[in-house]
Image 1 (tube, rainbow, N blue to C red):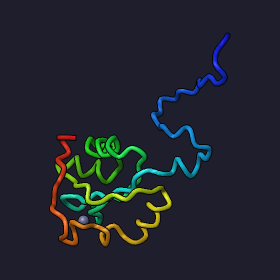
Image 2: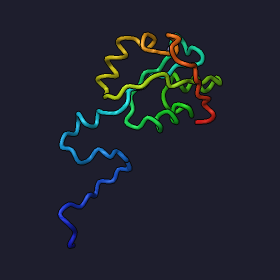
Image 3: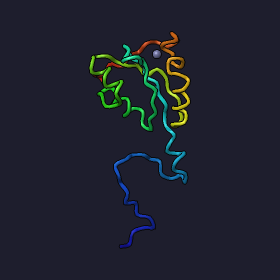
Length: 123
Ligand SMILES: [Zn+2]
């Protein structure tokens, strides 16, 4: 039993990499707020505004129908989505942007961005 001072035994499988800094809540809330623009409307929605600490994995989840109800429905009917925009920030920012309305924030809807759809099958 001659381990070093600290023996990290908590391995819950999360590759959070958030250790180090003292603050947990604020720091862990950092990540990426992202806006998805759908190739076709799902119900009344044509966007998905979300937050993730690991955007790439999250997008892959969306593409395979595991990212949420709207994208699941979208993928199920053969639609696709584009990553329209991202903002660095936490859940508070997500809430703030959601209140403003995703459509107003979408560069694709505004015609100021090329419509680069991500085919769900390639994710
Ligand atoms: Zn849009």
